[in-house]
Length: 167
Image (cartoon, rainbow, N blue to C red):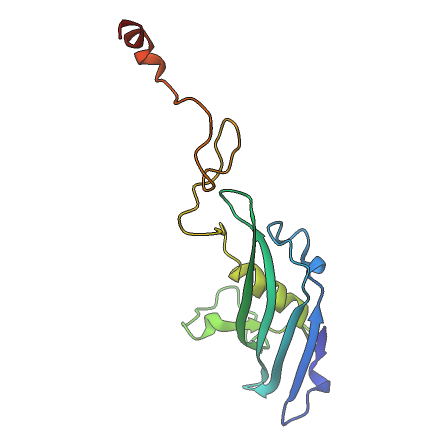
């Protein structure tokens, strides 16, 4: 969704839209989600730019990074971004801590889809786990070790193999 600045009245406006999870494909391979991403919020003129506050909600379907089992978890993230026009064309500009939360407004519209895409990618865990004590898969037989031990023999250190013959 593109929000033109000219369409935002002086008192601000509310917005709500859904984004299909498959539109994020290629950007987040771990996302297997099929639920739409619900975006709600408000846009207001502020400091010569546009302040966008809102919420991004969906249900994510992720793969556990250890056992590859599917995990379904709620996703609820807050948005608060100030889009401001470029103040200076200088090569180097010193930024304060407050300036780091400001996005440069290119053109006369804000692409809310890109904002949502960025928010989802930043908030999704890099290595999701089905549980904190997930043991993962056996490297030899690929059995799920969280379900129980596998039937693989204990590995013997090749340096100690000669000693095993003596026992």
